[in-house]
Length: 141
Image (cartoon, rainbow, N blue to C red; front, side, top):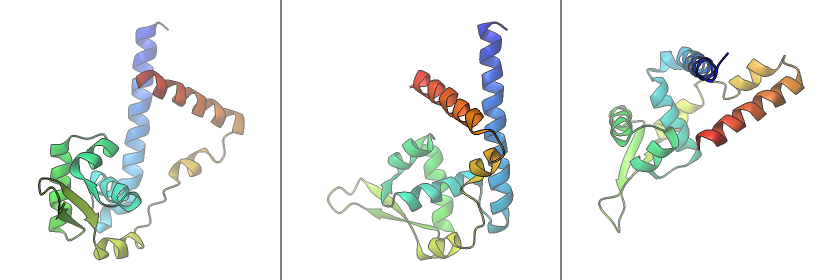
């Protein structure tokens, strides 16, 4: 297999992994009326409150306009609230609402889906996966 074919294979594998994650998460949150991107934005804000749209965009690896649209829909549903910085009115922060905190306890998404997927693999194979993905991540940085 030449380098081009190898690159194609890596690309297809990453796309498959990403689709499987989105499918599994989507299956678990569909009854709550959330999309996968909305859910991931809520998770980001749960871990790091008081972020600007730009900061959320960086963490989610999505454009500001995409995140703005997601935040608009979440705000309309009462799941997030925007607040302006008192010192610089151009800066707007996004935070979870109490409604979201209550909803969070009901959403059955297992944040440990990778743990469930790899639990039956040989530990040496898991280390190999980690090493390979780390190398790829460093190469792409």
